[in-house]
Amino acid sequence: MAVPATVQRDRTIEESSSWLNRGVAATGLIGGLVIVYLTAVGMVESFQGLNVLTDVLALGRTMVIITFLVVGYSAARRLTRQGHVAQGPRLAGGLVAGAVAGATAVLVLLAVDTIGVEHVRRMFQSFTANVVDNVLSFGQGVGFGALALLVGGAALGLAGAGLQLLPNRLRRATLTGLGTAIVVSLANEFIVAVFRNVESNFGLDIPLAWLYTGTGLAYSGLVVMFAAGFAVSWWRTRTPPEPETTRAAAMSGERSLWDVFRRGRPLKIVGWLALIALLVLMPLIVGQFLSQVINTVGIYVLLGLGLNIVVGFAGLLDLGYVAFFAVGAYATAILTSSASFLGGPFNFWVAMPLVVLLAVFSGILIGAPVLRLRGDYLAIVTLGFGEIARVFIASIWLQEYLGGAQGILRIPGPPLFGINLRNPQNLYYIILAFCLIAAFVAWRLKDSRVGRAWAAMREDETVAEAMGISVINYKLLAFAIGAGVGCLGGAFFAIQVGSVFPNSMDLLVSINALSVIVLGGMGSIPGVVLGAFGLVGLPELLREFEEFRLLIYGAVLVALMILKPEGLLPEVRRRRELHERELEEEQYEERVGEGAEPVLRAEAAEDEDKT
Image (cartoon, rainbow, N blue to C red; front, top):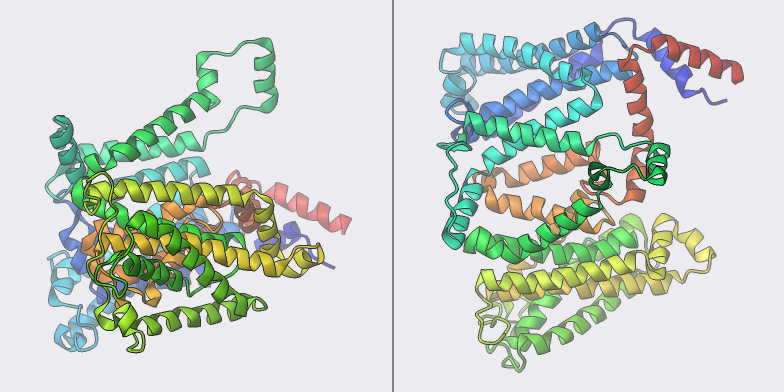
């Protein structure tokens, strides 16, 4: 007989008689190892040149501070889940976990100082003397550095535990405000460039001294950005009015202007108009270089929308999506470039329908052999098809037609009334138009009869087939439509670069496209856009992180899968599936935070009697 959840919680309360347990120590140890790892690979030292708060706090030390805060928060959360309702044990658990993390870093610091940095660098080349003497020791010697890490780690762990004790709404608003301030400080060059373009193109004089001083946030900028993030989060998590109250006010006619705006419709209209204006004026606002970055983001939006049909809608894990990207790029090059074996008989507008038809045919050709495969087997086979496509493109057998390792050069831009569409600021509008068309097609497909059939296949293919859905036909349709949308990304890549080479068609394209929809949320169209900006746009803007791009890339994906597996902007159904249990735990933590141990014990006894 299954044991009720409340009975299990009651047993946990009885078993966890001491707040100091192995879980708290393990949390601190993991945090200390994270600090050591970030230091050993050189991230802490490399980011010391980037200021979060002008001339006061650098990004390198900010990473260490955030790690201590996370350790304290995690320790307090662990104790909450174990049934400790009092604030004292949870605060003490955060303090101990922070101290353990600091002690771990101190042990490594003392070991490096004893052994000698030159010997440690034989294994960890980024572990320089500057890390020991200045970064970790604050320029005051190893002894002071060890004391600062130990005491500071304990204090920050205590602060992190204090964050966990705050009410959910206040905690989320505080974390959002801090995150907003850090992001704005890192986007210093981007924001300054945007404001300078606005000044030159629109004749506006916008002072920035209040926001930035040198390479970091000014004190006033820190306060304003924290307050802005806090206010937005606080507003979004507000409690809506009770339906009975709203209905009664509507029937009585007692609705103020504030009530009308609170319903959201006028605000939505204003928001959509502002978004349209922003999209139209984007090239003038951001300038030529950032327009190039946005165009690259648009290419991955097209790839993500196509792959989202295959993976997000139909549930077919495709790791060889680069094949359709290659079809779009090389078909565009062959049909439009004067350097191809056909001599470029068509312009872009005539060639585009032919490119899409060829990609649809290739999607059916690749999808046909894998109709009976599912899950991991399907992923492995499609991965093989992607590699086969790359090998064929680079082979000497097809060099006469595809250019081999030399690729195909002299790909012209789309002709349009004499406008130079090779200019990133002009090409932006063409890519934006195709992104909107692809998003509209995906949106209409999602809730159509075809979309519902794909959803049934994704949930349970056997049951869908038993209900009369032709699984074979809908699989082929998903591959064909996904290929037709994804090839547009390859076509615009060829136009943007002006040439195509086999080296551009590697596995990383498929991994990036899949990561885009995982980050944004599988099945979510707005999530694809957000994922593309997060995984493609931000690394282009933050070139300081280029050396550690893949490391940060992997860490973000791991954290996302643990903390928010449904993505940043998930589909409603997927969010409910993945967070039903977490919602129950959150409600339990809220009751624990109110000191509800007697209530929980009473519920446990009542459930046990019923059992």
